[in-house]
Length: 365
Image 1 (tube, one colour):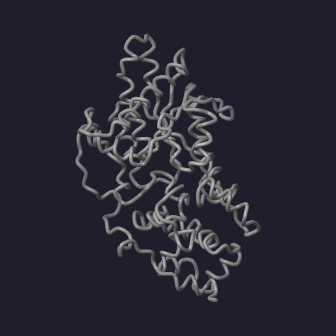
Image 2 (tube, rainbow, N blue to C red):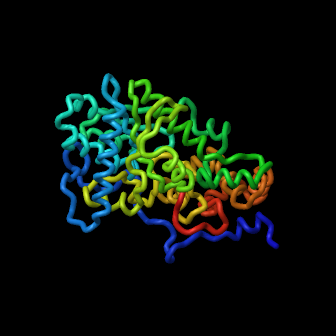
């Protein structure tokens, strides 16, 4: 039986259909059509389509947005729209914009106040190059009011406190139950809460908002969010943060999100063209056991950011400890015995692509 060191050195790069990665220009060099306000114009009329189910979901989401705002804004309180720059939140922002001209508001004397929601972006300190500019251009395109939130700690501080964000929320919990005493922890939920959720909700309260509308839809971590939908519904009160939450995209699928973006010609973040499955939190290892692991995508999309994560933040040993189910102490000894972390990252970068020896097909956080 080969040793762990021999397995690491024998590992070959994952290929899909004979292709290793994507040969594309670095982020920020793409040529995109520029229109009014610096981004591609949002078309109000979609292309012809035969997907009646999606049309129904659009109408239901708009109705849910209006309902949430009617019930939980007004009298000096406004809503906050959570916008990450990803596909889900892009669809949410467009649906919110459409809801402002919906007939249900025409006879409402509080329309101007209720419709004037803030847009909140959370700077997680783990963003692709150009994300801030993309966020600003998109929000400006809709003529909305952007506010920016940021955590009071760095990602590394958070990881040291509660664990590294690896595998996924449910998968990380199950892994920790079975693998204890290895000298490190993984915890996606606490990282998400500290770096994204808490800053956003804190800013929402400070702005005097009583309602936050998010693009969470239950596709990621279905077991957790599916149960939450049954328990809480589309609109619910979050006692921990003292705020109403609405998730009008609950139940939407990946295909429906993609179809909506195509139908309404929405301009996506340039990292999507590089294969990124999520925007924001580019150092997150949620889904790193899948072939479309964010670590692998980051390696091809932004080599400098990948190097920072693997070497400077010393995440490489955590990935290998997860993959081989070894203590961090043992993995560090092995890494040193075969040349050190920097050498491995330079000569065999693919060994840090996945947290599983044989990755699962696809992607799921």
